[in-house]
Image 1 (cartoon, one colour):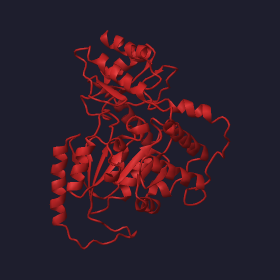
Image 2: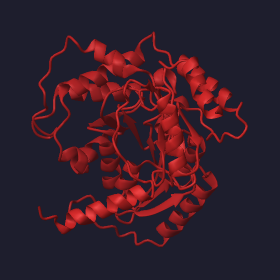
Image 3: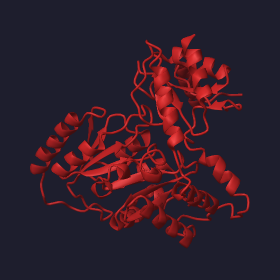
Length: 389
């Protein structure tokens, strides 16, 4: 069989990636103790148990702008918006779609977009598509963010105010945007949202916050870090994903009604895709019923976070990234060494995965350990028994 040149090219790149210990492959958990999923509250199992009596069509049959929209979805969007203290919201098929759609269509040519240097890949991809002038600030460094904002103000003063519309009629606003995560997915640390909001107000910037890993964990009934700090009216847009603590799939962009209408008209990841099926939206509705329940509590999860951090301090040479979230990261420098340590933990029945470069910076490879309501102190102790050896 004749091997095409493109196949040889792909093979050589894959082999080189293997030689550099950068090769990614899929694996299953094989009934190991879950320390790697984002199902922090165990909602995925609860919702599955509650869904047995429901029957829905297998597909939405079209995009939301064609056959895929229902009153159920629009009511759900408003219910979620009300829960998080927002005026309006628009559901996307995934958190990736939401971030790419939002960041690619809101900041436009001649606008300025300033992002934390370690924002999620979906935000990076959206930013690349935006045509905005882009700056990055050092991770969680508010002083560096202010320097970038000062640059944007200087640029705005020298910018021709005669703004013209593009071929789609969107126009350019000469606006400045800041994009951050409230809880960073790879480090687990929290953004200094209060200080960032103050800067955004002082410099007239519009703040975009991805609450993926804060929803369900922070704020009253898991409303998120923005709500916990009372900053709902200070944030231009929030992205709430359903695939983390809510145990479902999809995401919603929260903001004003104007923002919702704009996204419906210009967010390509919303316009040009088939809507999610009804059973997906029903699962999300049930997740929010669990959050709003008088029985809801995430106190056990926060206890386990505190317990984990206490155990980590007992190993003197262990480098733990400071985090108050369910994401706890132990630095194991080097791709091969990090993978070997993860394999040792997996061999003892603990599903802990390595996060290696280039996903994280070289030298900052780590074991990313996700804690859940259903984990136990004994399971956490087993992690440290392996690490001590």
